[in-house]
Image (cartoon, rainbow over all chains, first blue to last red; front, side, top):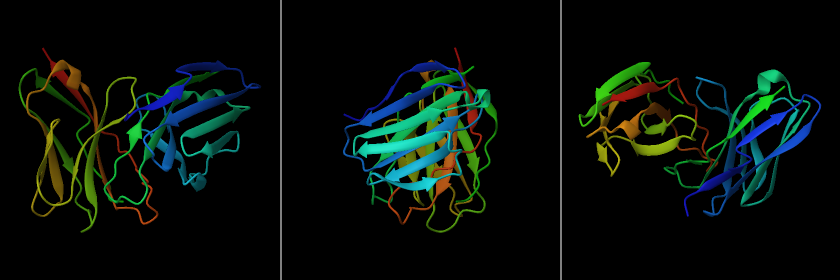
Length: 114
Length: 113
């Protein structure tokens, strides 16, 4: 199983809502990632978790709150978002400790903030 | 990680080879060259990677110049399903074990029937 799943596929939320994005993988990968991708732009790294601990936060606003409850799950909690946060949110995973390992990406959650 | 330069777009006739160039003139000795692609509205997909030698897998071939300052991804027989944005990425193997991948702007490949 080389699949990373993300739910929901689409999400529409208001600026006062609280919502969560979910990512799951069962490849035994111990590194998981959140990326944000605006239309016609490349993906931009937001967060990296390694062994369920936050290793990189790329100066992401606090209205985005990541969580890694176990080695298979990664969540992104959203609160008080702005319309400019509308984007495709991608999750990825990879092995840890393998210098040539690649990242496996999920299909993404397309978020619209009204 | 070294910066990469790719043409913004390319066309290729279906059934012909697609040759996608990437310039990485500031690459360091132990930086790898990776290629990913992103089909419209999907997550990026790993294609191939290499350090010095040319590499081939079931999807593509990677040709790296001897000075390692540039590389070419070759899709030997392009199909309509190969229409995508292709990203060339150069990065160090990360000491922390995880990977910090920085995507450039990529090349939009359009395969034409």
